[in-house]
Image 1: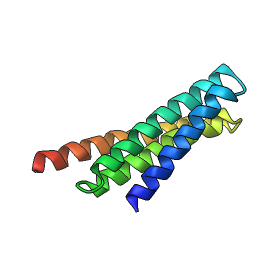
Image 2 (image 1 turned 180 degrees about the vertical axis):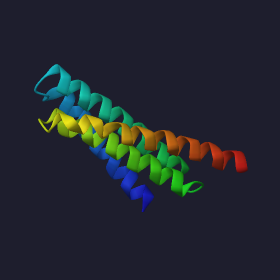
Image 3 (image 1 turned 90 degrees about the vertical axis):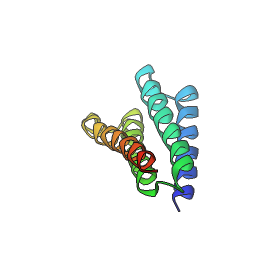
Length: 108
């Protein structure tokens, strides 16, 4: 199931990036979409790469990437700016996912 969610996450990232490049309402909105898309896509691919050896870390990367990116997407589409305070939760989960991955690799 991790692979399915990673693939869907990557698809959403590409769509958000395309919208940011062609339909964003302002330069700031375009930047939020670009940043969210980049982080979400990178971490979806990373989750695909590690899902067989580190399922927990892969899940953490997907959840973190989702929280990080979706809060930026919602703000870019006119959502409340207080979501910017939620974005670092996603970033913290991304860091935790990478540290978890390192731990798994060290144990092998």
